[in-house]
Image 1 (cartoon, helix red, strand yellow):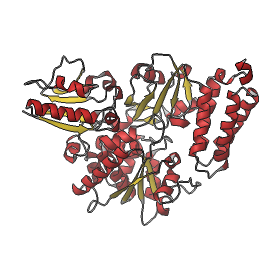
Image 2 (image 1 turned 90 degrees about the vertical axis):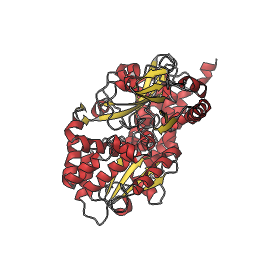
Image 3 (image 1 turned 180 degrees about the vertical axis):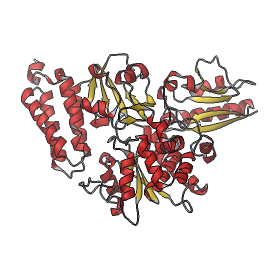
Image 4 (image 1 turned 120 degrees about the horizontal axis):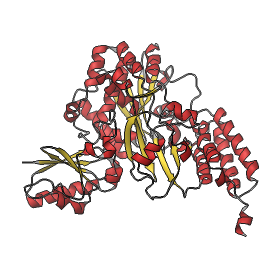
Length: 513
């Protein structure tokens, strides 16, 4: 009897030795004369347990982790595929508290299926959404997405159905679907996990979008720092074409474009410029991409998670999806816990969980064991929240009400050793380095911001320079062409507002004495 072992091929798991574990399993099985099959899956997102190996048993899969090559002999006992008493045994994956508490809709197949096996994808519900969309037709498919309440998961939170409707209503000979997978926010990896763990979900979502708005061509823009994701998705496109899911006869084609490391190309118009072969600079709006986007044609630009969620909505119905969440934030959000956190990983849940629950209960507090001092939500342009705001619900409007944003769902934890003045400086410096240079507030304001915060850190006229920083933030917020300059005020001003003691510095000379 052949026993199946599931070993993740996700980049995070490979970074901590998953490939070596797979090789050790195969070699140990050969040495003992045991028949095994190794299936390389995506990751379930419990990164502190990676590499997490799962073993198929008559009672379901049993997980072990974190597994090192030296642990492999303990997983293979002659005549018995597993030893449940092994100290690395985690039991059934779905019973692990971190997973059990989740509501996995978009990420339901990640870590479960072979990401490059169409039959496996179909066996776990793949294709049902596209099939229903074809039966409904474009108008009713659009209506379904609109009624679901799905909003952009890339950060802006714009209603997906409204964006699609605008493109559908536009008159043009050609329309495009563009997937923004240029995931550059600190502490985020949901796009990468889907590309590596369930790429056919994105293909299906883009095909549904194309059907709904009348587009026959799609582009997926992936950041160059994700080589594994690029290879996996390109392979998935070829398999989808060979399997008749995509390409000739299906009415939809997909091309992959790889970015060159520019954070600003995560902004939709700079991304379109890059796909067209131009320098990645932000376009002035209007016109909106929905009216005049890629190559001057009406274009849907959606984040990868948004598009990959659409198949579930079509398969299960708009009402089923809208039943999750709170207020205007419907459905689920893949929250990515990172930084100084004990249990870092992807946690998909309905909107409404509080920041305190995420950090203290789900994340387990800091990895160092020191008190949590600050949490940054929404990437490098997100606000820093102190413990006093940990009652904030993870919801677009709730965060906006407290001068924050949830962005792409990244949550980065800092303990009490963090220096918030230096974090504010980092935000300005990041903006200066990543600015496309097109608008003055972003290009010059961020540079002046770094210089001014450096003076504050040195204790030079702190009160006067703090006023200047606030003025710079207001200028950048309301004068920048895009969110790179416009949102830099969030981390800077939140650091000043919530952690003023870090900006009240004696002059360097006095401190030295």
